[in-house]
Each structure stands twice: as structure tokens, then as C-alpha cells.
Image 1 (cartoon, rainbow, N blue to C red):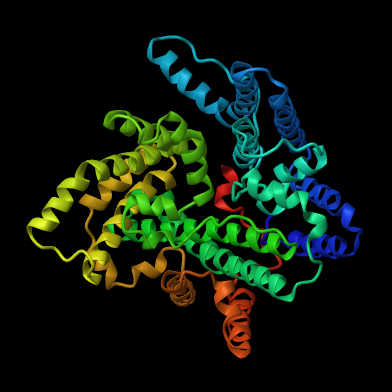
Image 2 (image 1 turned 180 degrees about the horizontal axis):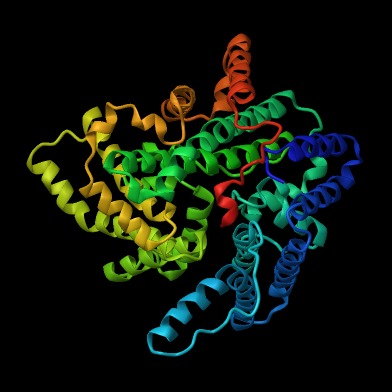
Length: 494
């Protein structure tokens, strides 16, 4: 069941209706049942794995206060991590490890190992595994007290709005709200309206922009050898918009759906393409994952409170793990490595850059300087996106090579760009939708508030005009129909 499906259009109102009328003490149980139904709609067998992860981390939380001594507590944490990461590694990385082992064996003349069975990657396993493991660490550090109610904890792990693609919630935020769910006010017009606006804006990004622009990206990248530099550059920039709108839309719908029920989930995106450095980009992009890696990997490795070279190591390890978390493919590892190198290069070149600016009296506070920073950052991010989007390293290198060697500026004038999956009308619809997205992001940059908060402070007529405009775009220009099969969100595969 995906957010942009007819199934969810029926499922969510039923969940809300029952949630609002049942006794307060039963709310969390109802949400737990709804969450497992939501997850099992993909494959009922998936529920066994999320239940197993829930049991392991719940018991770990109960055992930690009873463990005597630091060594015993570390043993409990290690057991929780090894078990959960072992499950994740088996289902997500078994095929990847086996294929690479076979490459190594065949290179030395040894027969390849036959694949003993087929493994289906459970949807969202990376997300709920990291969320459950953060609970174990938080209890170990003493940041929270162990949850004594198993069913409340199970809801924390499986809460359906953010279950399969985040945000990756922290126990201090979401679990504490689960414990207070009986206290939530049933009807709050402003809260429900703000949640509905976020859901509507998310559907707009997914159905009008992401699913439409994917036609260009798929056509060019699937046959990259047929296209020149302009088409490949265009497809790469389109992919940056696609993945932002696709993943950002899921986060918006998740946050909005949770807010309708009274829950506040953490923010996951903050206009990432407005970043003026790669470091700032990661403070704005997939915030829940980047902050998780910082708190539970980078800082425990030593962070920046160590020697310069160890700090560089910590950065690279963190981004390699980030790349591997995204998928069992060398393309994701290279993508993570590139971002790690960007960060390290920024640290190394930072002092020289500041010296240069002082020496030549560069006005770093001007619009032009900041615009230049944003353009350079966007270019670096897009270069890394090539490896993220390509199916293989060879394909990614092929795209890069053709970008720099197959110049074809004439395609800008011969109308052939309208043959990349979208006709002229579709392109105009896409450009209008991107303009609306740009205006919403501009409000976020200038005022520091999200669209729902901005509209709440505006006149009633303007607020409803914006809501109607979003609804109109989704209804008229959204990608759906009688024969339509709702497209999975990109991050479902992670």
C-alpha cells in the first residue's frame, strides 16, 4: 500500500474515523493493528521480521538496567546490534556479497557458488531496523527509561505513516508521544488542517512532479549511450528534482498523516538544494538519517574530537555506511564515498579558501558569492547523483564520459528535447509545477517556516486558494487513472 494509491485513500480515513471514536485507552492498540495491516499489505511474511526486531530490541531495553557492570551492558547492546544488523545484512546484502564473492572466485579459476535460494528484500527494513536500534542505544546511554509496555513499543517501531521510508524517528520523540496518546485532543481544527495541507503538498510533489519527470530520467539513463551531453545533463538535473520530490513527498505525507492523529514527527528535508556547502546539504537532506549516523556512528567513532586524519577516517566511514545503507550496489558505495571526499576536501581547503578571500577582499556576504556557492554545491551533488541513479559503475562512468565528450548543443534548438519522454504540453505542466514548488521552497528559505505554517498565518481566502490550486493540480495533472498502478516511492527499495 503506497500513499498515492486508492487503497490508502480508503485505508487512512477508516483509521482516522475509528481512532477518533474508540476509547482513549485503546488508541495505541488500534494504531498498532492498523500499522501491521499497512505493512502486511505488501507481503504478510514481512511482519515476522519487524516483529522479531521489535522483540529483540524490547527485551534488550529491559535487560540493560538489570545488567551488572558496563561490560554486561555492552554485551546486551552488542547482541541487539549483531542480531538486527545480521537480519538486515542477510536480506539486503546476501545477493550482493555472493555476487562479489563469485567474481573473486572466478577470477582465480574457482567455480562460482550457486545461489541457494531467492531472497526478497522486505520493504522498509533499513528504516525500522535503524529506528529500533536507536532505542537500544538510548536506553544504554540513559537518555530514556526502558518501555515496559510491549505493545506501545511495538507501535513505536511500526507506526505506519513513517514505517517504510522514514523519517527515522528517535525514541525520545515518538515513543514518548505513544506513551501520551490517550492525552491527545480528539479534534483540533488547526492541527488537522496543517496535517492535511502537508499531505496534499506531498501528493502534489509525488504525483505531479516526481512521477512525471521520471519519464525523462528513465528514458535517458536506460539508454544513455544514445544521448549526448545536453540530454544527459538535463536527465541528471531532472533526477535531482525527481528524488527530492519523491522522497520529500513521502516525508511530507508521513508527517502530515501523523499530525492529523496528534503526533509530531521530525523534519526530514529543509530545502536541501539551497545549501551553500556539502556539509550544509547534509544538514538539510534526509535529516533523520544524517543525524542518526552522526549520533550513533560518527560521534562514537570519535567525531572531530581526535586527530585530523582520524577525523577524515570517521567522515569517510560514516558516508560509506550511508552509501551502503541505501543499497547493495557499488554505485551507492561510490556515491557515499564521493560525499565523504567532498566533506574532507572542504575541511582541507577551508583555511586556504578563507585566506584567499581575505587576501583579495572577496565579499562573501554578497548575493553573487552565495549564489556561486549554491551553484557549485548543486553541481557536486548532481555529479554524485549520477552514480546513485546508474545501475552499474560502468553505466555511471559511461554517462560521465559522454557528458564531457559528446557535446550536442543543437538539441536545444531542434525540438528533440520534447522527445525525451514528455511532449511539449507535459513539459509545460512540469515547469508550472516546479514553479509552485520553487515558490514554496522560497517561502521556507525566507521565512523559515513550512507551507502549512505559512498558510495558517495568511488570510482565509488566500489559504483556501492555495489548497484548491494544489488539489486542482493533483486532480487534473496528477499521474493516475483507471489503468494506473501507483508508482513505488524510490526510497522503498532501501
